[in-house]
Length: 127
Image (cartoon, rainbow, N blue to C red):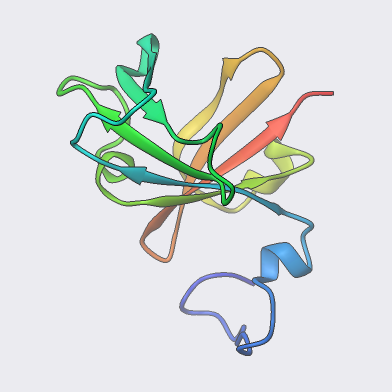
């Protein structure tokens, strides 16, 4: 049902398909930057810094990458939106995956897909 080459047409007042029909919930937007930001936290295995998420009323997270970060180039250059899903494996079915499921911290699974040329992060919190 998604993508630019499908018959799905969204009206101005309509929520995105994945929110309205699949139960995905907005979590945050990640914005790449090359500038050092206040309160950065370093994620060693991804060779990147993140900031802003904990204090943003809107779920805005800044991301700054080391030159040799293993994170896909598109994620380093293009902002992404993140959705919480109930079952990440189910949510990934039929999607173009750019970053396979990983566990960046205890109780969290994440993966990145491409939708309409932009990265989208899927997050499952293990309960």
